[in-house]
Amino acid sequence: MQLNPIYYTDQHIAFADSVRKFVQKELMPHINEWDEAETFPRELYKKAADIGLLGLGFDENYGGISGTDAFYVLLSSIELAKTASGGLCASLLSHSIGAPPINHFASTEIKESVLTQILSGEKISALAITEPGGGSDVAALQTKAIREGDDYIITGEKTFITSGMRADYYTVAVRTDPDAKGANGISMLLIDAHSAGITKTKLDKMGWWASDTAHLHFDQVRVPAKNLLGAENMGFLVIMNNFNMERFFLASSSYGFALTCYEEALEWAQQRKTFGKRLVDHQVMRHKLVDMATRLTTTRALLEDTAYRLGQPELQGNDLVAQICMLKNVATQTMQFCADAAVQTLGGMGFMRGTKSERIYREVKVNMIGGGAEEIMKDLASRQLGY
Image (cartoon, rainbow, N blue to C red; front, side, top):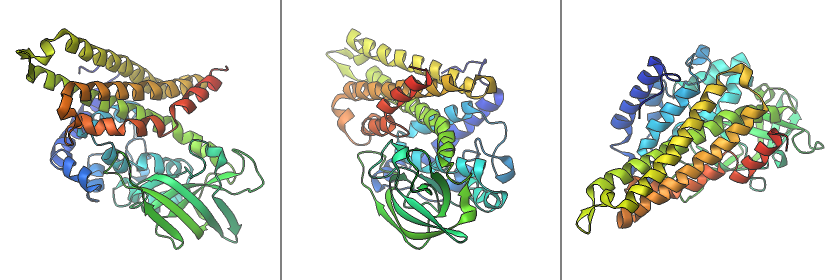
């Protein structure tokens, strides 16, 4: 797809090319094996760091890459989606949601000792907010942090945590004021994932097989108070600060997976013959492909407009938050439509393990739910727009 010079620079294109080569060399030869094994080698984090994939949007003083905007996220998401493995993408980049609170709110000491290790691929970061009884209702979280001298004592549970089993650091939402209601009284803490009192349980999933996903139990876990991210009882602001880019990343990935489905369906339709002619020579199939292409084109336009707005301080505000909510829904609906259409196009082969569309079809719902379910996105958008 030709890139619009209004949005993309030579640096964007060069970076996308480096990610494309990384995907072809390091990921594609092994991706089916890793997905079936429900894991991938830990050294992949270091290889991803070496091409700058882990440093996007982070402070260069701690190993990040300066001058990288949302278009870098969009382009890298599209290239990674060619693996058709959302699990690998989610776990390999779990730091993209686990580490920003460290980048923006941790002390210099913590950044030097922890963030540098994460961005170099030496250590793995995970975000731990969701709880068994809360889901998208972040304000309802129950995990408690009680101050005891120079430490906090953590008790509670987290679930659906991406990279929860292998992570070295958790960025955890806790309730530091038990009497506060809703979003008040919440704080964010950086917790060493190897601390005494943490129990990790692997969760089995419909899709994202290559991503380890865990249920975490904290039983009187002692955490230094210096690991507080931001001000005490102001953690909800830290969480909200994280959501824009998380949702943009999910939208970008969803577009990439939808595009991968389209490309596989198109290639199949150009080769497969039925009733004496290629599938693509049947009008009904051409219409199906055009429907996919139409949704992809409209989604790409909204993605690029949103990426541009994310880089313009004067365009930040409620309207942008609403647009990101709408973008996530549009992109995941496009992924759902294209995955379904691709499996239908491939017919029996679309039901076989090993095709890209089959794997993506199983992973549609996690994109529609993760980072805020579709219904939550609509409600948040309506509030931002003043309804």
